[in-house]
Image (tube, rainbow, N blue to C red; front, side, top):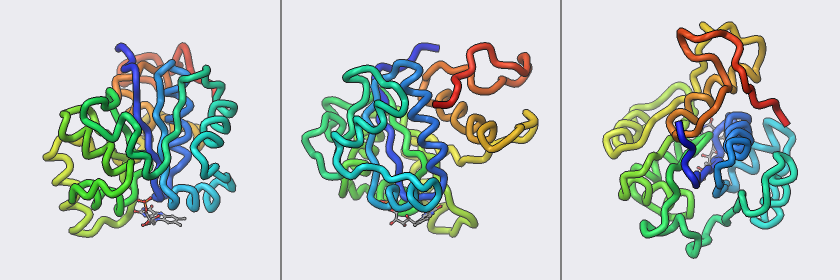
Length: 213
Ligand SMILES: Cc1cc2nc3c(=O)[nH]c(=O)nc-3n(C[C@H](O)[C@H](O)[C@H](O)COP(=O)(O)O)c2cc1C
């Protein structure tokens, strides 16, 4: 599997930021170029579930994550919520693939309605219209008929709906194994090589496991 050159990754205000952070770490380890975006609600969730303060200013955020995950210079760019001059705001310069992880039901609804009211929604809108891979990792439970209709609409428009639903048949030893199970499925959809979790029918120990930062 060859890694796409550029991946857009957005964190929104659903629970499950550990999935998003691990995905970012793995994308950078796989030498992908990453465009990172996050919503104000994602910052609230980061504080609530991880005691983590995500910087508000894009350049501070880029330094924070580059240091945390050892990104090489120029590998990671963080865009602000209304940075309409970002390449991913236009169909003339989309990323190779995009993931929104975790994805709130609010953002699901906005994308399903074509609102494009901030850069996350606009970048997702661009991926759909340009027929590029858009992987949505929605988190809510239970799901209402509105949620289900929005998810179906997005699936029909070409998005991959990938709920964070880890399998237990791999005998996970802890939360990090459950997180890696989901992140492995997302990386598969993004076309990014990894050895995070064993594949069905293969040996149980992965040869090049990416250690956590
Ligand atoms: C701690 C916390 C957890 C939340 N978990 C979820 C969730 O799992 N799913 C969801 O759809 N919204 C969740 N929300 C609500 C969203 O953050 C809220 O709807 C927000 O407006 C989403 O905005 P965004 O899509 O721009 O990030 C949560 C909020 C907080 C503070």
